[in-house]
Structure formats: C-alpha cells, structure tokens
Image 1 (tube, helix red, strand yellow):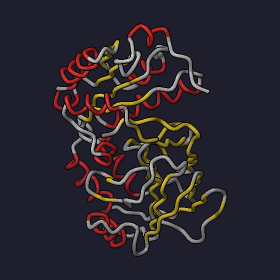
Image 2 (cartoon, rainbow, N blue to C red):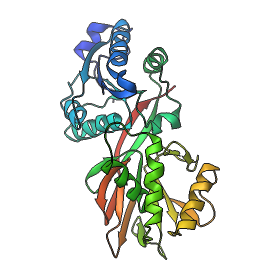
Image 3 (cartoon, one colour):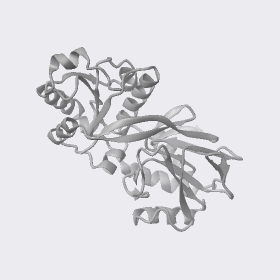
Length: 312
C-alpha cells in the first residue's frame, strides 16, 4: 500500500525531490562556519523547489526539541554540524516517530570536530556536493540502540575508554579536538584499575571476564582506530567487540591493532547482537557516542526503528 500524495507535494509538482525540508545547524561548528553553510544548503534546496526552513541551535538539547516538533509535511531533515548535532536530530526524530510522526530522510553536512559516521560513509563536506547527495535520494538504513533509556547511533564503550571520555569532558572548555584524548588516555593508564566486565548477548552469558567492551555501529573509532569493516548499518544488530585484557600492555596492544586495521584479532573477538547487558562487581564508567553516560550496569537494545540516511 502506498501513501497518498500530500497536498503540498501536489502543489510543488514532480520536480521537487521533497515536499518540505528542515535544516538544523550548529552555528559554531566548522570554526563558526555552521550558519553560513546551513544558509547555503537552505538556498540550494529552495532552488530545487523544496520549501525549506532553517533552525540554528542555541545550546545542548535545542536541536532535539526542534526536531521533536517537526511539521507533518517535512520529508527531509539536514544536520549541519558534528556527531553531536546529528545525534540530537536522530533523538528528536526517534521520539517524534514513536509519537506517530511521518518518516523522513536524513541528510548530513559534516562540519564538526568528530564526524565518525560521515567518515565511514564518505559524506561530502562541500555544500554543492552535499546538495547532489540530497537530490539523488539514495539512502542506507541506519540502526540505533536504546542505552539505559537514551539513543546511540555510533558506539557505546564500557571500561577505560569511557574513563578517558569522562576526563576529556571534565576538562572541556570549548570544542574538543582529537589531541585532547591523548593526555587523558595517559592519565587513565597511569592510574589504571582494570575493569572486570560480565557480558550477556541476546540473553546468553558469555564465559570469562572482559577488560573493555565496545558495542559499535561504526568503523572509524575516534578517527584513528579502525574497527571491523564488516560492520553492517541496518541489520538490526550492533557489532560487539570483546577485549579480554584490561591491563596496560593489553590495552596499548589493542590500540596498536586498531591503528594497523587488525581488529578483531588476538584476544579481541567480535560478535553481533541485538541485546547486550554489561555488569560488574564495582561501578565501571560507560560512554555513549562520545559522551559520559554513567556507570554499569548497562542495558543496550537495538530498536526496531531504522533511519534513512542519504549517501552518495
């Protein structure tokens, strides 16, 4: 059964690729180029015949709240900024969809410090090329997971990586660069108290304990470490990387393996799962998509909702 054409769609005619679009931008992203880039995207979509609105974010949570109130006729939302902006757009759409809103396609103009998903998918940073992607309307399905009640579309880390993320955010005084993670990682290693994590995958308790776990929907972790290129974005599961060792030598070895594109391997194995539960005797920190999120236990479940992400 096909959806009946909307009145706005009929008014615009067949040449317009979308009935209505909304551009959501972080104005300070890309060294404060976010606003000008967003206006270029907006004008480009209007030249295609698409009725387009624009929203400049004013702080954390603003993009999510705006997208939650998405107009019914909107068929495209473009995120201009980094992974944080895209995450808020997805969270708003996730909540709006659960409330019965119409499905939309998602475009990305990656301008932030961290653009992990755009690196995986080779999304253009140039406005003209990005507009070609939006007009082409080619999509991939993107899984998202519910993590102790919040949304994840990139990676959940439990163990030392989350301790590093926590340190970086405590010292944050503006945009975070990749170099900020190196001194934080050295401090975590210097005071390391190895984690001992228990893991359940789809209801099955795995034998043994783990020093670090990544539950991932991405390939380029942190921009440098490469996880398995066999990642599948829309199969209803996340890839689970299980690192047996939690000592200094073991963790450094895993990083080196990632830099050499050799993960999984050695004492790191990869499984796929829809539901993941991670527990520990003492509280161990975890992070969600690069943000500190709390301590164990962690309950992760890939949802039935898949987003349609525009790609070249």
